[in-house]
Length: 221
Image (tube, one colour):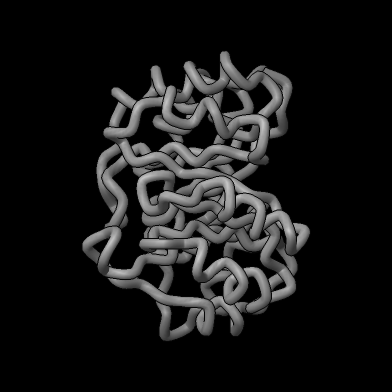
């Protein structure tokens, strides 16, 4: 696979009492900043909304992952909340209006992605591949950070990569230096990591270990 490997620290594992300081500690070594939005309805946890993202100060693009019911109703609020928002993904399982949601995201000049929960088969996303910019494969059940990477998701990543050789494939859940290698070998090129990075004593080293492992697996080193 020739696509560039990107690392996206997830602020789900950051200290929200000093959110911008935590972001600043990883930003120089990251490619994207991942924002997990949860509503307590689609997933059993509540995190933050567009008002928190509005106050994020960083130079790297913001990658907003909507784990919310009826995301089509909230696209505008997230698209407009911060000029650094570049990517918005929503869950196929959370809406009956996937094409409408894609079009609304793209209307703001942003990259549109569809996320899949672990139990959703890869084939469910195939009809939408021509319309989207990336797929987000959840390698844990969405809702909480710090979970173990589900290796049974690797065939799903392979299936999507085979169907869409040029598409960006993002993975989120249990990513560390070891699982990053597996994800990239399966075809992923955007790696979201939360607790492994923000929970590390040396965050630069943690980020570098993911990047190195992933790049070796992709043949970039």
